[in-house]
Image 1 (cartoon, helix red, strand yellow):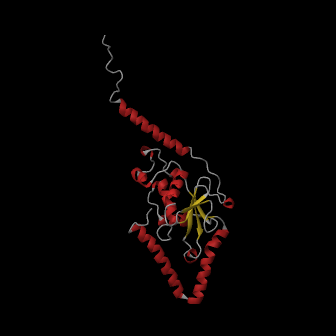
Image 2 (cartoon, helix red, strand yellow; image 1 turned 180 degrees about the vertical axis):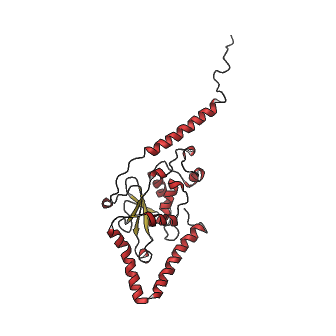
Image 3 (cartoon, one colour; image 1 turned 45 degrees about the vertical axis):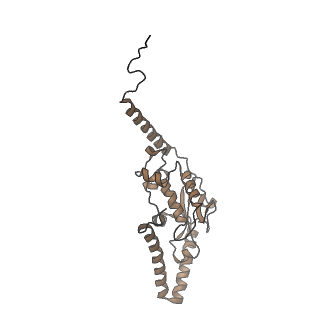
Length: 251
């Protein structure tokens, strides 16, 4: 005997499919937004224990900072406050900040980052470019991915340095909705918004520069100042040219 089955049974209405897809996307977006509010609480910044959760940290470099105090060594910190910094070829140091204690720091807001569970879950406007650059599901995941990438990179002060590593991390995080972090705008961010750890940090950052400046003026006079100005101009010009003209220094 032939079995009769109603025409609607076992089949989905054409209108039902888009509604279910839309509901799924809304559910993923809600899950992504919920994760933003459920971020792991951070500990306090504690310079004595060298703990700077989700911070960019800076310290002066020997010799280089004596001539140009706005240049230094930078690193970025995990959620537990441990510092990661690109300290040499194929080497990213963990919790052992090169060139001394942190002098300056800037704590970043994780809510300004993009942690997409999938393509539909991006909070930044450049989702496809973010996927090409590399995404992450958490702050520490982004830092770990960048660390693995830079463990196969050669260190060079002028082409691939500690700033390049931190900029790569910020691009993976899509911090502040941006994917164009580089050596120049990272250095400017620290310069204008960074906080000094204490008075001694200010002293050890500028005292060598002031001493070299005074000795140079006493021994050579105005030509020394001109030489310092030329040195700074060439240094800054190199990075500006490499990033914004040839784009060869963009990670």
